[in-house]
Structure formats: structure tokens, C-alpha cells
Image (cartoon, rainbow, N blue to C red; front, side):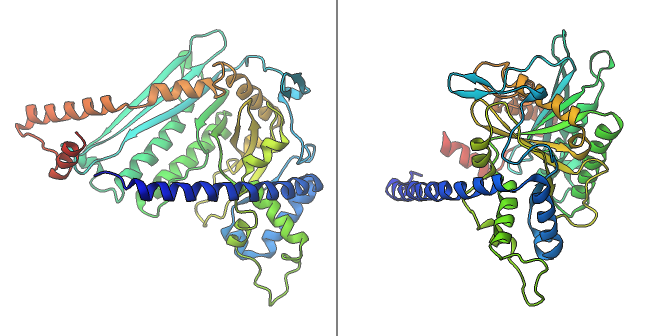
Length: 411
């Protein structure tokens, strides 16, 4: 069916105009937020935000925000790896290149085939890969592939969500498995947030969340691996919401103590305080390439029973890249070890320079390349399953009429 190009053009033009208006408003909000960032010390900001959340219970139950934990690193100041000073470069100043780490680094990634109710065979698949890099050694690949049949998925309330959650848990598990010569990494990287985002109340979702929590705790607390989640081009506004709370407090909208008759602002009021502003816009103005922000402790409004494991409460910092910005999620046990954070910072700054002009951690690029299931491979898996069904069951599997119609139309 052809697109309605006239309607599409009208909508696209309106969207572009709206984006320009938002950009203008963002520039104004950014100026205000930067001034606020410079006016608060880390310990004052931490104390005030915690007092606000303790005073305004509805906010504490619904608002995702953060506060800084490093008193020696001002909010409007960044830090280079291993205490190095900024160096001049053709377009401003940046942290000096990091030396190659003298410790093993590993990254894990995965991809999946979610069940298709209209395919000739009902199945799911998770493909995982980890790339282990040790000084002086050729990178080593660890692989895991798991196939799920219709019988495996029959009891799952949400089969696609189960497949995705299984992938998340076992990506993390690969970081702790023995590598060449029984080696385990000092630093383990995941592509994306470190938190387990697969939500749900069914038995499988709860079980996977607990597996992830317990596994993360074991890797960090027992094996001592510096686990981190690397988020490229983050869109979060967690620090912006912290600054919004401070701005609202200064404006008298969050008085402490709270008057009994005053309900106080909602989480949506905080979100709309600077609705177009993101943390990335803020830190790209504050940090020089190679610098990281202070570490922040995330305030996560979770229900009882969903709390993180010992030493795994989510923390994060922002890392300015030669082009762009990344958020680095770390567990609490790593966040409170300055030497561990320096190791991670140095490693990431080195990794993003291995591939010229790519500015993405090399070990994560390799892990993705090894784990991705391409469309051609998906076709081959389905063909294999169909052939085996014919061989062993003497029964031809057929795709649904709906899928055949869509495929013929596309052709």
C-alpha cells in the first residue's frame, strides 16, 4: 500500500518546527541548569535531595533521580583517567591518551530470535558471545547458543519477554565464566544499562530478575569483577531531575518541613520543570573529552522485594567522548572504590580509541559482531528445523496464511 506522501510531508514539517522550538527552549533551560550545577557542592546537593525525598513521600515512590557521592569532585568539574591533567589539542583541550590496561577485559553481548506465531516452526533462540582481551594475548571468544522449542515456551505468559530476559541474565553470566587458562576478567562490560529492565509480575519475570540480581552480586562481591554497563548516546535526565528538585526547593515549591495542607509537586511536575533537557546536553557542556563526571547514586522507586543485591545498588557517571557522550552504570561495590573506578575509566578511554574514528569500546564492538544473528542465519535456522521435522515426524510445517500473504505482498 503506498504512503500518503502529502499527509506525511505536512506531519514531518510540523515535527521539524516543533523540534526547533524545543531546541530553543532547551538552550534557555540549559543555561539555568548549568548555573545551578555550579552553585551547589556535592555534599550540599546530596543532603538536600535526600531531605526532599524523605519529606515528600509521593516523590520518593515515583521519581527516578540521583545524588552525587564524591565530595572531592565538584559537580561542575570533570576528572581525567588516573589523575592526568587536560592537554591542549587542535580543537580545545582533552584528557591524554590512556595506556593499554595491564589487566584482562571482557565484554558480553547477545541477540535473539523471538517466537513468531505465523512462522512454519514455533521456536525461540538466544545467541551469546563474550570477547576476552588479556595483555599480550589474542582476543578469545566465548560462545553460547540456546534453542527454545514450542514445548519449552508453552508455559510462558510472555514468551518474547522471557527470551529477552533470559538473554540479559546469560550475557551477565558470560562475564564470570572461565576464559583461556581459567582466566576471568578484571573488568566486565555489558552493552546497555546495568539494571535488569525486564519488568513483570509473572513467575518467569520474577525468577529472571532474581537470577540477575544474585548473579550480579556474586560477580561483584565474590569474584571481584568490575562490572559496568555502557550506554551510548544516553537520553536519560536523572541528574537534570536532581537539579530540578534543587531549583524547585530554592523557588519555595518544596519547603522543608512540608506544611500539612501542602500536597507538594508530583513526579510529572519535576519531569516538566525542564522537559526538553537531558543529562547529555548538560555534561557535553561541562566535560572535556576523556573526562568523567562525578559518580551519582541512583534513586530508584522500586517496590519491596525488587531491591538490588548487596553491593549492587545502581550508580553511574558520564564519560565525554571525542564525539558524543556515554553513561557508565556501575554497582555500589565498584562506585565506592576509587582505584576501581580509575581502572574502569582508563580502560574505557583506551578502548574507544582502538578503532580510529569509531569512539566506541572495541571489545563491545567485537562482542556484538560475534553475537548478532543476521537475517540469513535466521532463515537457515528455520529451514533446519523444518527439515528435521519432515525427517523425524514425516510432517511438513507450514507458515500461516497471514505471513504468506504479507511475504507475497512485499515481494
